[in-house]
Length: 228
Ligand code: APR
Image (tube, rainbow, N blue to C red; front, side):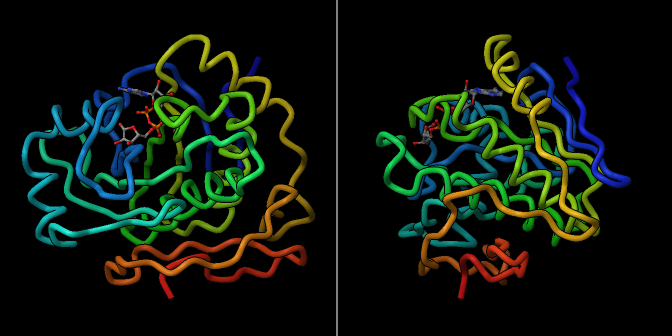
């Protein structure tokens, strides 16, 4: 089963591994709204990076910072093999009827948009929300892949996005979802996954517009998702 999807002259790929050890221009973290660190990958990222990330979070966004679910912010990467860490806040799984897929889609798409604005060429993503936040991986995979593929279509700097799955079962769950990606509609931007309509949310953090994400409506027209 394939682990790569070619998107024009760009690539979306799946690998198994530890995202803290794989070099990339930008590494995406699975954070929480308070941006204060945590368990899971968030803890591993802060440990591997050293204190620089927390200091940068404090400096850029203040001690009382907050990043809405579905959005993301950037910091330096400390000792990680990257230039930036993009802290994405995915949704907690509450059964699937509370806009979780839209929020997960937005977390991926916003993060990729931020990476592209930073002129990153390579970006690594974890399976956001599939750990402590309990999002079933089989449900998360198609949402993640749809958001990333569409974001790659629109990207001007990012050339390669790699989803780094922490375990063999996680990788095995993502592979069929990659194989079942529907074809992109003729030429232009992607279409979003079904059931997408949720209202724009206000954000407390607007880091030089880096918190902006965008999402296609049913007609393929982009609208701002966050940050304004
Ligand atoms: N490399 C790649 N993937 C990893 C790594 C790693 N080093 N460590 C964990 N993972 C995977 C998990 O297996 C899971 O599939 O990342 C995915 C996301 O898991 P979590 O880190 O638990 O993140 P999430 O489910 O989004 O929950 C976020 O957890 O750490 C806290 O502060 C964070 O409160 C927030 C919540």
